[in-house]
Image (cartoon, rainbow, N blue to C red):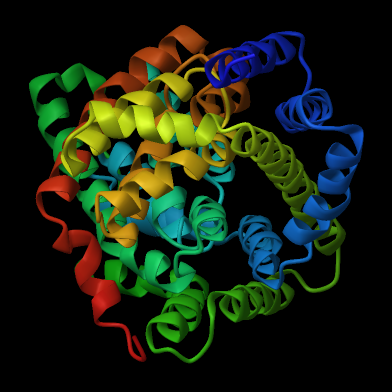
Amino acid sequence: MTTEWIGIISVILLFLLLCFGIPVGVSLGLIGFFGLFLTSSLETAFAVVQTLPYSVVGNYSWAVLPLFVFMGTIAGSCGMTDDLFNVAKIWLGRLRGGLYLTVTWGSAAFGAVSGSTVVNAVVFTRLALPQMLQQGYSKSLSIGCIASAGTFAAMIPPSLTMVIYCMITEVSLGRLMIAGIIPGLLTAINYSLFILIFVRLKPSLAPKLALEDYSMKEKLASLGRAWGIVIIIILVFGGIWGGFFAPSAAGAIGAFGVFIIALFKLGLKGNWIIEGLKSSAAVACIIFTILIGGLLFSRFLALQGVISQCVEFITSSITSGLGLIVFFTLLYLVLGCLIDTASIMVITLPFLFPLVQGYQIDPILFGILFVKMIEISTLTPPVGLNLFAAVSAAGKDVSMKQGTKGVLPFLGVEALTMVELIMFPQLSLWLPNTMMGQ
């Protein structure tokens, strides 16, 4: 059987297994194992299965992943999200479209302690959507704003997406995390400008509210409610940027800092500690299962020459780095409609990243563009995880059709941001180049 047919049959089998409801990590692992067995030998298949899981899970650098999940889970449990939302509402609520802006900047701030876009989307759906609907905001645009702003957690560190990207490509996680700060803020600014213009053109989307008018003194005083987030940001980002500790240690320090704040706010009453640990372990296990299965699948394709064949085909078809970026943009738009983001990364990065190196594209810049495309893929139906999570959390209040309609304008804003990042690479590269010890 030719290399091309091995690749085609593997992809077809993957989608067939997914259609039957088999978890994606298990599907990838099964195809990888039986592919190695049929094309090499049973000994080869078992040798890979025996060594690969430990080489993934036993890597100390992966410790940062469950720690970042724990940070976001506990931050939500101790009311940090509510505090951020209320502060943003005090500052922005009286503007037309103020609740859209509140969600945008509240999500951006919460993204600094939560590495999961899905957690962001679910938390703000439950927190903000009832208020938005009660105040007469557009149902579709409200859920679209919440789902879209939730993706900020992928770009604004700590980010699980960045962790997976760096572990697969061996790019510096510290530099990539710092590089995501300006693009993340740029995205939030673009969202805000779009909202302000859009609600002016269509006032029915956001009625002007007769909310309480706060003085500047009261607004400044409200910032004190966000003291927990500020401390965590200084600890994590300041430590990484200043070269005081590695990202793995930053994850531990951030998680410990959030735990202490939660202990101060909640004490030992309730079961928030146990629930936080259980939730973090569950998310980490799901991601590790996808990683192990995906890398087993990739190992099979690499041994059969499928990945090198793909690299050769793309290289012969694309003549520039910009062409490569356009190609992977279109690729992720399609894949984001079909499978989850972690699976996209472990399937595609093994053959995409060598191309990036061949075209001499800065790996940090490519990492930021890659994360941006992953952000977008979480919004594209029918399997866009953020869209699905937000609509599910809304219950009967919002349909998938309304959610899809609501995210479309924000997909346009994401595309504009992507163009800005491509045209001005220093938006992504300036801050990591200022890091101490680099």
